[in-house]
Image (cartoon, helix red, strand yellow):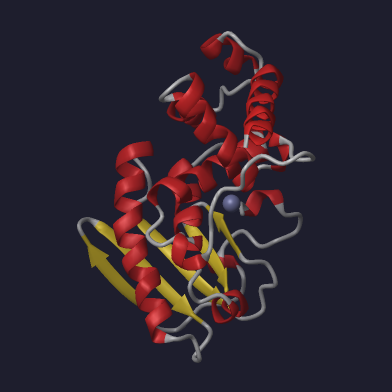
Length: 227
Ligand SMILES: [Zn+2]
């Protein structure tokens, strides 16, 4: 999730009124992770996996999507937060409740640090596509999606790309495979530069966004009939 899309939430750990007195600081390969944890009961194995996943995935995502991305990122394990996780700037907040309930969902880190790498001017970017690209990155670069039982859903009636997240990510995978390899990166760069418009889909592929969605859903329906 992206912090900017939630009304009234704080703008980052540093302005939440919370500050761990001695956060853990890790450095590796030019990147720094500051790990602030309110939750003394957080499983150390989960914490270690989060740190490992950060260094492994963030290096790849920044190389691929944003070589100028922040080199220092803050993780804040929040005991009061009722969402799952959210990113704002280079701050990521994780729900300790979620990490207790779903300790295997380690690629929540991948989704969130993709938001850090995206560094979009959020107000000029459609939320569905921002979240779709973050889940696309989780799908592509996640360290253990299967261990979390996380996958992209096949198309079902009732879905729409505006739902974002995995539904949009699945559509983006189809776009890459069936319409235009590299399209996600093109969209990503336009979003990053703040010049994304829906007209881009037609400029790039010859089809409008809704025509592409229609083709995607049509192919999915055909495949389900053939089965
Ligand atoms: Zn997100």
